Length: 51
Image (cartoon, rainbow, N blue to C red; front, side, top):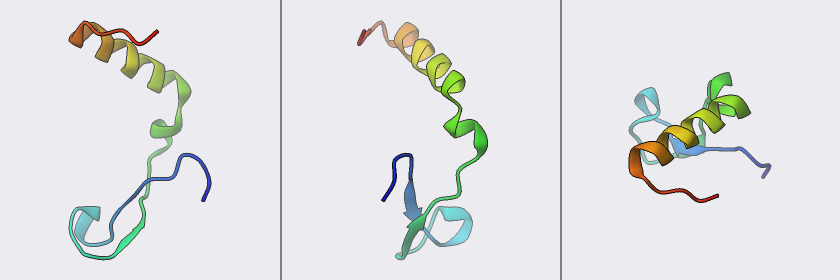
């Protein structure tokens, strides 16, 4: 295994099925800038900071 892998159902639109496979992840999911913005927004919306 390598970091950044996601796994899920292998059926219809990766939402159903018993078999599991590595999920197809869009490029934006691995973008550090997007991750930082998402984290900052989550902290603001919840009022919880982990830094």
